[in-house]
Length: 285
Ligand SMILES: [Zn+2]
Image (cartoon, rainbow, N blue to C red; front, side, top):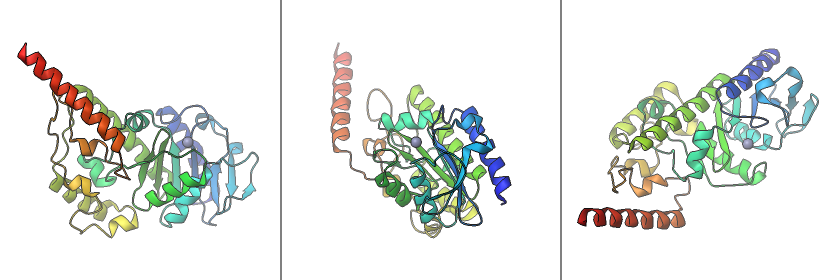
């Protein structure tokens, strides 16, 4: 794609992100890898809903500014980490989708198999442990995770979605937020039924072959669990474990990249115990 085309598309997709409430004010940043290997990206401190050509800068693959006024954002390190990890991608969109971020703050994982279409195209969406924005530590975590995922969430921060072009990266971001809205609505209604694990694996395997994905994941398409994490294969669906009727199993609620949530687990099991006690008392009355 010519740089002039990439510039137009970047401005368009920035506007769409704003119109679809996927970011506000100066949030987020978008980039495209040009055929020269250089990266066209949004500069620091510009509103993505009102982008103009002057808001775009060109940097090299190490982040050094080549063209454009204004400076590239410190979050560009995340974009560079994605391009280094994935030679197959040409676009990165980082935004702050509100419902998806609320899932990370509420400590509810989106690494779950709920909607067949999403399992086909995205697999599960992992949440990375909290890191300070703009740091190398965050960029390195993002680079590691993007090896196996096209869409990820960062705790208390936002989403990073990648694709062969900006439209594909944007679609993945939109799908993530739409899934968050559907899952949140189901939770509000009382429960979330997970897909049967065998069906989820079947769908994921078909999806990786039909629609592609991270090369490392595509290579796993015929493995017993495809590229799904082990926690998904042990999923027994919503078991309605407590009187409030909001599933799924405790382990799945906190299914994260690290699988290390001892404090949150302890709080949760205490909460569930007290809910059970309250329900028993109410029944005895
Ligand atoms: Zn950000």
